[in-house]
Amino acid sequence: MSACIFCKIAGGEVASQFVHEDEEVVAFKDLNPIAPTHLLVVPRKHIARVADATQEDERLLGRLQLVVAEVAKKAGLTDFRVVTNNGKGAGQSVDHLHYHVISGRRMNWPPG
Ligand code: AMP
Image (cartoon, rainbow, N blue to C red):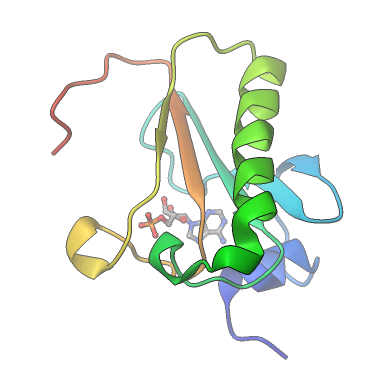
């Protein structure tokens, strides 16, 4: 059994508020939202971070971005930010690839 929290969520062992589920990708509401809308788009396959993706994951990475667009559309978002943190120093706290979809407040650039 995996100890990874996002594997557990994707596998239904830990409850979450799903906004999307298919064979390869799930999306759910972030437990500690940093904006009025804060969704996480996550592959079912355990890839620790985007730097660990391989050629084999090329199609899955494309699929993840399409799901980002789908969940944003479903949530009625026009302006939103898509972020993936790669490594602790960049702010990654869960070692399972995920894209944050953040919206509903002013976004600053450059990000902090
Ligand atoms: P990161 O810090 O980029 O790795 O993002 C991890 C995100 O996962 C954070 O925004 C957390 O709030 C979120 N998170 C951690 N545990 C859960 C959970 N059980 N359900 C939903 N979101 C979670």
